[in-house]
Image (tube, rainbow, N blue to C red; front, side, top):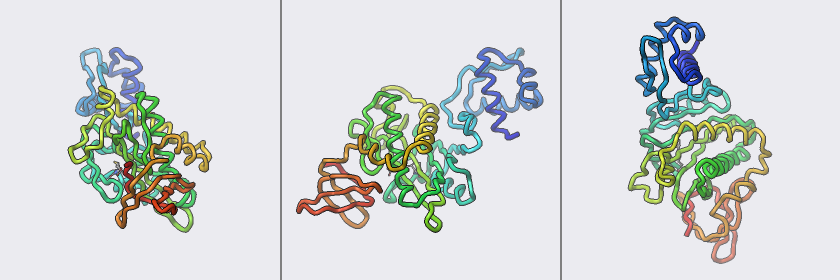
Length: 311
Ligand code: BTN
C-alpha cells in the first residue's frame, strides 16, 4: 500500500469520527500495526496537521491548507505535490514524456523558476496556487489549443461562483478581476504526427500571496475578498469542473462560450510579440483562438500569440 494512501485513510477516519479514535481502531480498520499508525500520525503532525494525542487515541483538531495528494482522495494517484520545484511545467513535461496518464496534476507550494508566457518569469511565492495539468486529448494540435480557452473559461466561471467576483478573461487566457490580473495560463504542446501526444496547461493563481511590486497590475483573491482563501477547496473544485467540462463539452462550443466572458473584444488593444507591436480594434476571436484585429487603415490582421494591452 502506498504510504500516502495510508495518511489519506487515517485523515479520512479522523475527519469522519470527529472525536477521539483509538490507535487500535485505526490499526484494525487500515490493517497496519499501531506503531505504524503512530509514525504516520507523527509525520502528519510535522506536515502541519493538528492532531491531539492522548492515552485514548487521536483526534484531528485542524488541517492545514495543504495540497498533498491525499487531500484529493478521488484523484490521489494522479496528483504530484512538491513543496518547491523549479517549475511545475518542467516536472509535468518529464512525467508526460514518461507516459503519465491523462489528467495527471503537478502542484508546487512555490516555484524557483516559474515561467510565464513570452518567456517571462512568473513570481511564485508561498500562498499562491501553481499547478500544471497533463492532458492527452487525442486531437490535432490546433484543436487542442482550444483547451486553453476552456481552462480560462472554467476558471473565470468558478471564481465568480465561489467568491462572487466579476472575473473576466483577457485574450488569450489571463483572468482579471476589477481590471487586475489574478491568474495566468501557460501551455506547452508536444505532437507526434498529426495528433497532440500531450498538452500541459500550467495555472498560476494569486490566492493568498502578495504580488510583487514588479507586477503592479496584479492582485490576489485574498486582497479582493478580504479573506484568506482555501487553496485546497479552490483546486479541488477547479479540477472537478475542468475535467467535467472537457469530457462533456463539444469542442466547437468552447470559444463561443469563452467570448461571453472576455473583456478584450470591441475595444482598442495593443498586441506586443517578440517580433512586433500591433494596435487596433479587437473585433473577434476565431475558432482557433486567434485574435482578429482591425487596424487603423481598416485592414484585418490575425494575431496568433502576444501580450494584449487594453488601451
Ligand atoms: C502568464 O504569463 O500569464 C502565464 C503564467 C503561468 C504560470 C504558471 S504557475 C504553474 C505553471 N508553472 C510555471 O512555471 N508556469 C505555470
